[in-house]
Image (cartoon, rainbow, N blue to C red; front, side, top):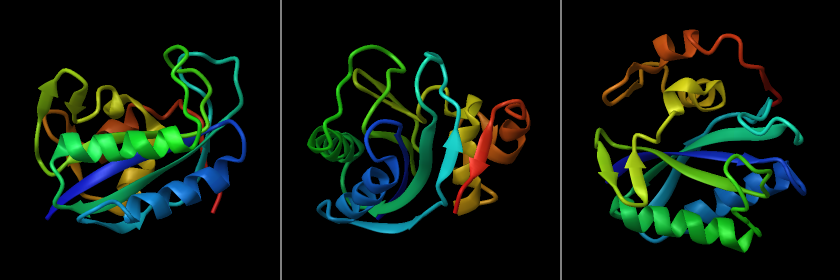
Length: 159
């Protein structure tokens, strides 16, 4: 089994319901079990600022799936929730990002792990640290140290 971490986000429709349903759907992926998830966090949008606030979380999965197969499964869950990719950082009904896959560093078309820019985003680092306070991001360093550099980003734990 490999431990994978998945970032969840939504800001259209009913974000809390969509994240909750996505957690259930991830636990139903083959050879995968939901090992835990963070609290939900309300966060300001990044990039395209003219949109509603996001609800974000991070899930820990134990899986026997290969990283690419896991990503395909996550994208299938997004599609079932009406995910459209109209432009970068657009509003969305559901976003599932494969953040980490064990200690692996992967760079191939369509899949980069650790997820690019995760080390710059409080909405990823804070919930990730809730799940594992000692976690490090391969090639980047300790998540707790990286979070200090994101102190200006608005993030509010809501449950």
